[in-house]
Image (cartoon, rainbow, N blue to C red):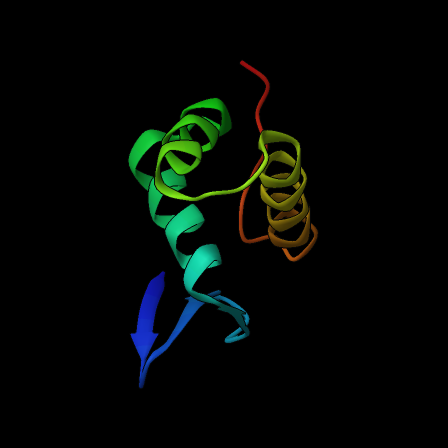
Length: 79
């Protein structure tokens, strides 16, 4: 579950009660992942929205997904 709590975006694990805080860019990544489901789509959309090198964005996106996966908040599937 994703919520905005007093200006902080968080992903809540309903089973454990733990949450993962997101900054504005992380929250945008999350919203796009939920909407599109594929990281390639998220990457392309964010490249159009942010002035950032493609390699840097890819690294940041993968780092977020790895953190979320390690906490059991997302499941990574190859497509």
